[in-house]
Image 1 (tube, helix red, strand yellow):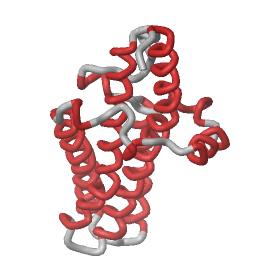
Image 2 (tube, one colour):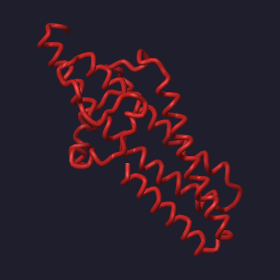
Image 3 (tube, rainbow, N blue to C red):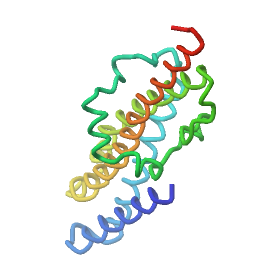
Image 4 (tube, rainbow, N blue to C red):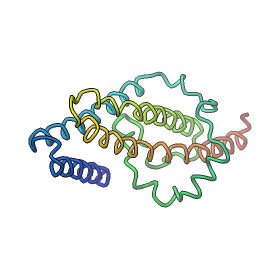
Length: 188
């Protein structure tokens, strides 16, 4: 979490400093708009997360085609070295009651099914946050819509893509583990 907050703080500082240096607006206006846009990103992303958390688990089938990870996608994640950096990505599932930081019950099929469902919910949450982050541009009435709100939205997009990649990287492994457990227990 510290890494994410550092990235957000540095990005917001750079965005504000560049806008102040370029004379996009009065320094106090630029700072206010930057703080507003960052706070709005947190509010939008948090609202989406709460709404998705409240949806029933039955909407997220463990074998849903909407969340299927292709072989090409798995190969891409291997080339990106996701395994090396995935633990540095912000994971706030524990706030909602289910942390995806570690597989706590690797021999419990019900737990692994719940883990997969939570991964699907996380993917949907982050994917909905991609375009929603650009809503801040509609709340700023000046060139700052493009010089402050757009860069903040792009940082938000980047910071939402990373957990999506990690969740999709982990899902095939979880599905394989679940299949092995079911085969071992004689459940198909």
